[in-house]
Length: 387
Image (cartoon, rainbow, N blue to C red; front, side, top):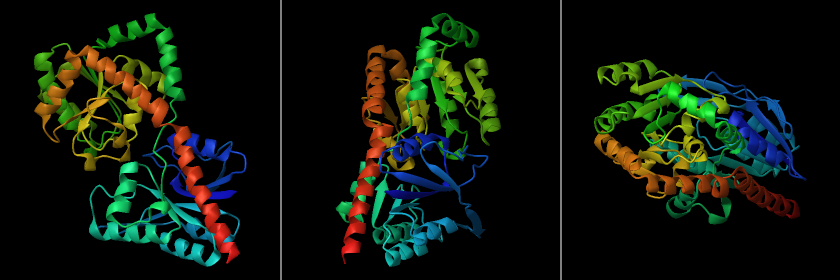
């Protein structure tokens, strides 16, 4: 089966999914994508899939942003593919013509995306659903959104599929194993940075306004009153870094907050997270949740579930993490102290966090979601040919 996937770029974390999908006997995968940006590192080659450069034009008209990727239409019209998977993003002016071309050419067009907007824009939501109902099927990141589309937006259940978002845990496991074997080196790292694995909070991500990291710094100041030897490790860089550093100074946190900067090598991230007690992400959490779970770290984040990405579905409050009252720094501090003061709870949540990413949210199961929708597309094409 010849499959084309169009993407704005091939993110590095997505490569294991494409490699596994393209490596399945009978699947010939081509990924059409733009180049990497300075925000998100991309990949432009693959062992089990063919990378084809496909530029994305980004434009803005006043407050409205739109995109155009000519490849979306071209791959459908080419007749070379048995199914085409396009980004389910209503910002693309090329999306409507590509779906229409699929209907004319008898090529199944499948849309892959979140299926919702965190900002809840009425017109944009309506346009997204309009496209989704005219494609052959849609592929989502979470069961919760899939059920909502069927229940509230009247999508046909047999045309809604799920590939739960996941990251490859192999590099994380390898880094954990390396540092766990080198106990003296890990102990030295902890002494150097004065980290106590019983009282250390970690955050790893871009330092962006939507993540509300200032709430974490404020909550940590309250934690320090109760636990003076606690440390906060912030790994990442971004436009908010200077303001966050200034806030830490104003709150007299001194060297109890460590700004480690951007770290991309897993082996260099590992000692920080292996020296941490809990992972806190104030709002807008996504794949960072899977990253933290891979280290057996319970996650604390906002109870405003709509503020997060689909990966929030993997957090089960009280089992592998905790939810704090959105925007309430006092409650966030209480949740952090709860984990600090209850080692048995922490150990239980750590075990369930690891189980979640090694048994449920796996690359293998994500690829299974792709195979299900591709099997549906195969039947759509067969029915079209029989008419």
